[in-house]
Image 1: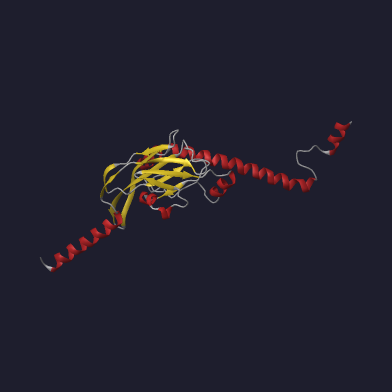
Image 2 (image 1 turned 45 degrees about the vertical axis):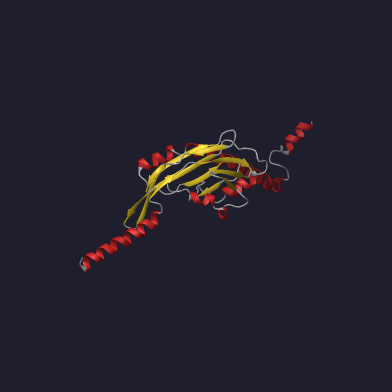
Length: 234
């Protein structure tokens, strides 16, 4: 083996090592994500919570690993608060999924890397407790003020799940169709949250306008003018 050939082989091994480190697991078995979601204060089960996952293919590219949509899937909890998001089984060059757990009116859990859900340091106040392979997830019921604070500064209620869960101009039309088809329940719940927060904001704005107009006119804007009041008394 000549020196030039050895150099070429070494370069290929180095590139392969970099690619493998970027891709993480090359071949793995992706099992189901199952559990129960309950109210933090009452311990009662919460139905209708959306659990959504985003899986991505990882392939080599000139600048490193390239991520593309592989699968977007979602499920809601039943009346007992239970769910089971189906895994992809045996997969090749597919990343661990991103996960979001969301229901309008409650705290939400977002993690771009599924194994973090099993790491207590990533979730405060025992949000997630594992009983074997089953997760017990506690969500806090939020006041409308807390929901409004969460919404501040978020233009489209985007989340960390932005490579497949959320449509992106870098994806093909086919990929976007796959994304949209896989997140209908999630989108419906987000729209409900936005509508309720917007209603609260509109009420707050009206109240602020009301308080601003009173000093200007000396009475609430809904009050009748003085000549009308005089006619009423007569």
